[in-house]
Image 1: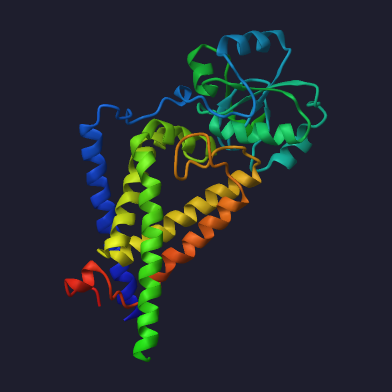
Image 2 (image 1 turned 180 degrees about the horizontal axis):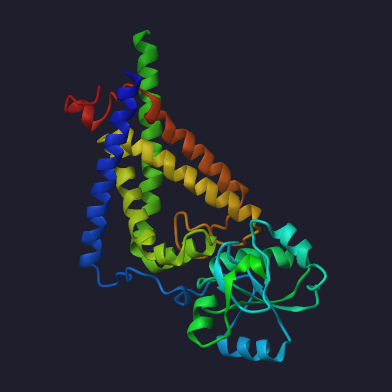
Length: 160
Length: 154
């Protein structure tokens, strides 16, 4: 009886979700202000805690060696920017402790992820909490860096 | 169980379903009207991958509207209550992580403008909504509902 009660609820929920999906499709078809199916990450003026930096500017700083590059992607992420230090949100304290001798609060940091700035922003907040103030997020992340001809290294991000 | 007590339980179930239904229906209106602004509100939580922002911003308000209507009229009410509980739990998780991360953002709950900042008061409101939505889900009887009037609600 109890199992039947929950099965009934699940079946009804499924039918409502299907109905809503159909209604969404109809709305999407008839409305002139419909959104494109895929969002352009840069199209949103994200409420980021730190400013973004363009690829060209970041490349200049990279070649001048004036800024530290921080890889915020997960440990098994492939490739990366040569010389970048790895500091991820999930293991922020440990990662920061491992690179503490190289990263000082007065340093200028350029944080990057795969492409979208959203996960990188979480790491930026953690740096801000630790007193770091000169932080930028790389616009377009590693994907745009590679497409733009920026130097890349092989192996996983944790190898650095 | 006495008739009087059963009637009180039926009243409570219906009141909770109506209350939660009105909240969900009302919450969906502005989001359906302004999908781009709602996508921005979702993006500010930094939880949804960019590729899913638009489908999420388009689909979620319609689900909210369907759930709200179903709760009010009593059609597929248990299923609607189940979805309401799951969605409210998701909202609570999003608000909690935003608070923990110190994000100063608008919640995007009822209107997509800058008003309604994420805060503890919002969290408490969602907990009340969660409880209200759970009542029609766990109650076996659904006396005053469209399904009951059609003879399929018991």
